Amino acid sequence: MDAGGSIFNAMLQEFDGAARLLGLDPGIWKILTHPKRQITVSCPIQMDNGEIEVFTGYRVQYNITLGPAKGGIRYHPGVTLDEVTALAAWMTWKCAVAHIPFGGGKGGVICDPTRLSRRELEALTRRYVAEIIDAIGPEKDVPAPDVNTNDQIMAWVMDTYSMHVGHTATAVVTGKPVEMGGSLGRREATGRGVMIVTREAAKHLGFDVKGARVAVQGFGNVGSVSADLLARAGAKIVAVTDWKGGVSNEKGLDIPKMLDYAKQHKTIDGFPGGDPIDNAKLFGLDVEVLVPAALENQITMENAPQIRAKIVSEGANGPTTPEAHRYLHEHGVFVIPDILANAGGVTTSYFEWVQDRHGYFWQEDEVNQRLERKMCEAFDAVLNTSLRYKTDLRTGAYIVAISRVATVTKMRGMYA
Ligand code: NAD
Image (tube, rainbow, N blue to C red; front, side):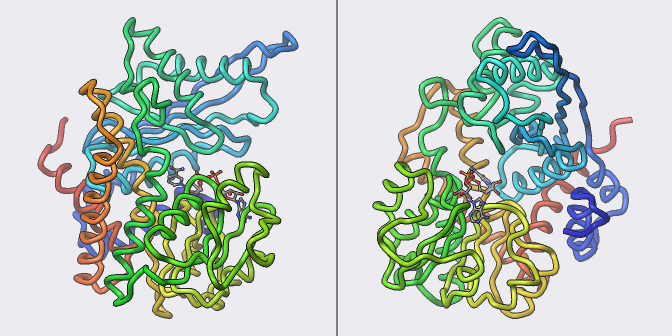
């Protein structure tokens, strides 16, 4: 994304395009393009060698008009306030598209977790949470896992917050282990959402996912579950790649066997059920559906002209550059944007928060049925809006999100 190097400016470009089409009130425009709250904290930690290190952490609450801020915590050496702010803004639009009562937030700590011992990681997590403790809470801001953070780290977040408030507060964070207030179905939720919107898009374009050929980039949480559930829906997964390599088989890969292989080998490279393939070839395959579910900026002007898929279903966040997105749209490719396609994860996080607050937990099929309904409603809202405004689905999704947040902003009025 080239927007002067700023990810936040890239987000603003997408926002502005949709806001213009929507005819957004200039005052509301100003409000929605400013983060509500940006917190920067220093976290001093005694390392295992006895030395003190100070880590910088951020928590941004971009907009909390619809409800508590919601968004992950990222541990990465490249974390910046600009990036965290952009991610918090995207969470605002994603929650609004999914029609769940959350605003958008995001957190990050500048660190390389691969160089921290388990004790150091726990100490850093607890100190970071203690530093932002006044800003978070079930009614204020509800973090979740993101890059390099997991359910164990969420358990430490929950425990630290609970120790400070003096009682067990499960609803302060989502993505927790199921044993301590996590939701059944959360692990699979993002991939399940990808499957649902892909199936609905195929229906809209006049074909069935049953029998459709699908290529998937990435075989982690999102990619592997998307592949598995699309295969269960009758699709033929003809190629998968991961960080190390890839496998293709035009007759269809055996996904359950691939899941076992990936568990054992930590990669799908060398899986015996097909021929080797790389990302460049995967993107150019003759398939009906392409699911980028790995990293950002994978579909660029270098490979977009080779894409033959009818549907690109963005499992990853930001996998398509704005130029490549324009190219694909102009060439008739139906791109299901990230803020819709991967919203199944945050939707089931919302279900986790609801169950924690009720202290009553649903069966897995109930979670899945509710997710099915929410994803279909979100897909229909975005599709109908993009048809009404004669625009692409990404702009349609922004229009849905912005108008929902703008409507409530106007209803609540100006506090001054
Ligand atoms: P993950 O770490 O579980 O998996 C990432 C996968 O991508 C791995 O299989 C890895 O090998 C593969 N990969 C890395 N580099 C690659 C490359 N160059 N070519 C091909 N494959 C490569 O992560 P995840 O949770 O599945 O997240 C994937 C994307 O989905 C990210 O953009 C993330 O932000 C987004 N996302 C995740 C969730 C969620 O609930 N997990 C929710 C919304 C969005």
